Image (cartoon, rainbow, N blue to C red; front, side, top):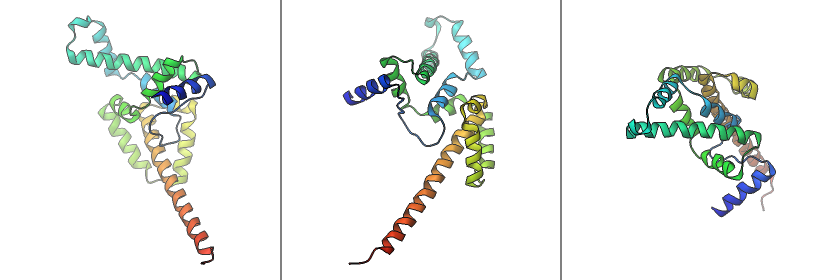
Length: 192
């Protein structure tokens, strides 16, 4: 724990950004967190309106947990925005770093409706068999921050999944290349 705290302190002082969690794609992870934490579905807006019309004592235990989840996400969205600009205190920096240990994909799945998930699945199915070069070009175009911010939540989710698929495919191709080179070098070495 001490090393983690010291690392966070040094990164915050130098203006660096630490990424905590699974990195399996070429999208800006901070931009993804900001987009998904900031997004409020119609359902979420309605629930927040309902909660604001009640006193905390009137809420059931389940509703209190739901309200706490929304408050935490709103708080973290603000902190991620500060983090992206390098304006966090050490404590806020640490909060963001540790929050990144949560699953971004779980957040995405929680935020999308079932009809949005179906649309996303259909688009992914249509796109997944495209050649790697075409997929890479689409991802490069959409991953630019100004383009990413304009994407619908369905398209942002599709891009996230495609980016992971592209990343894994690229790693697979690279692994094959490296193995081929190693075999070639091994064959070229004289036997003793």
